[in-house]
Image (cartoon, rainbow, N blue to C red; front, side):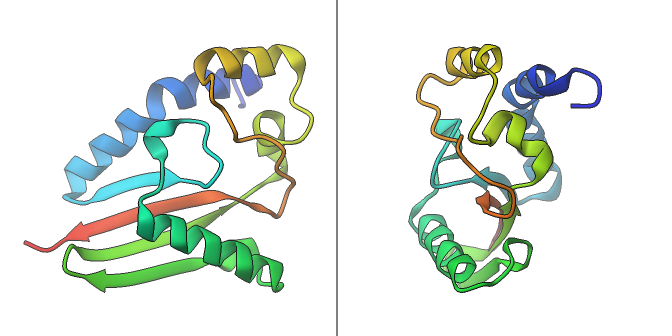
Length: 136
């Protein structure tokens, strides 16, 4: 955003986000990612546990809990799972808010034809970071 503005941020997310999480996952021996109920990139689709936690996050947010405080953890046969909410920030509104500029909207639609990740307001739930530590 600092160097290329919103269009540069879209390019960076499109080209760098998945390779970065894959690299970190490999380096740490864990699965790291991002997910949401309303996706921009289908590669970030939530699995069943993640979708359940995202719905719970929305319920907790509706009950007055701040988005920044939302997190979940579970231990099961597959290992330890953790999610931390991504609260919608003011700076994110350029690409994810209710009023995305037409030229930027066209760029997003070209890269993500099935984009559903707009219309968010600051303080709402944008999605979550995920971490899975597998058992050896």
